[in-house]
Image (cartoon, rainbow, N blue to C red; front, side, top):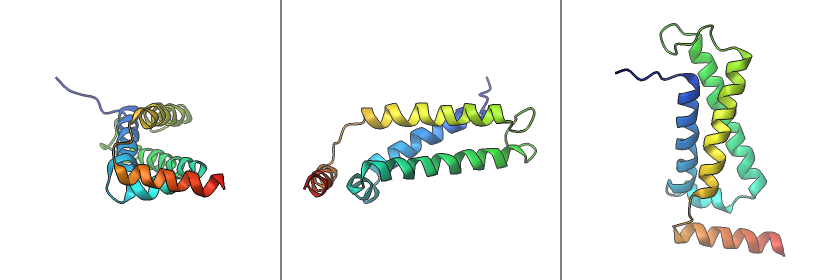
Length: 114
């Protein structure tokens, strides 16, 4: 049995890993939680663009990603959709389990509410 790692599957996995990284990696999770929501979204969007660019670049190297033809616009939209679909629902469903993150969120809310 073989598993095909297409650009969409790799993008979905990368989006999931990125979301888990920002939610659970020590020090990064506190820094990320203390940012404004629009800055958080821009950072995630930037990482999504980088992931998509890396996948597009890797598709032109023979034998790395098996896409036929190498990365078209349709592939780009599909990869972007996979990144968004794996990132947004997972990040909104993750509980805030760490006290330091809750404290950072409370400080952010106080800072922007006053």
